[in-house]
Image (cartoon, rainbow, N blue to C red):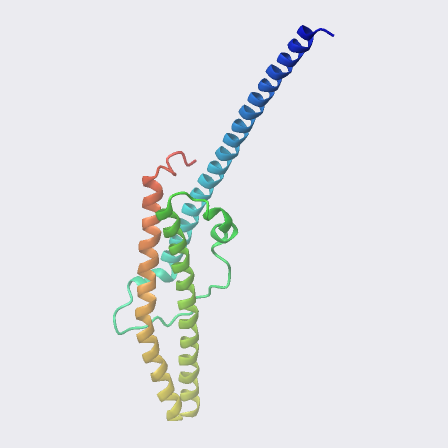
Length: 196
């Protein structure tokens, strides 16, 4: 074989290899871009869904027990039972792995804060429910037995409820402010501008 044929074969192989490398690199960049676009689309959808979840949860809460907490006067207590037996935070709870991928650190932190506060509010209602049940239990026992210890216990639980009402109102306002801040941040970031 002549050296010219070997040389031309070698040059052809090198040029072919360069084209394969360039093609592989461009394909990798294209695939990386698609993956990133899909991830951004997924996160955008999550943010829209979180917005909707916060909006619906707050609307439902405000139309129900929230209006009573909002108008609760100092020295009074919330004597109703707030039943919170369902998992109301389905979007947040089922997408916790994506929340960590939200690039805006402040927004991510505020979303986590909002949901932590909202779950804390539910916990506060559960404790309030317990106090209401104890209060009512002793009121009933006092009316049936006329035993003053039950009257004394009912008054003690009533005072606990009055004191605890401050915590309910505080959490109510913290959640309200945090949800509103999230919604403003999402509006400002343009996340909702193409919401359909």
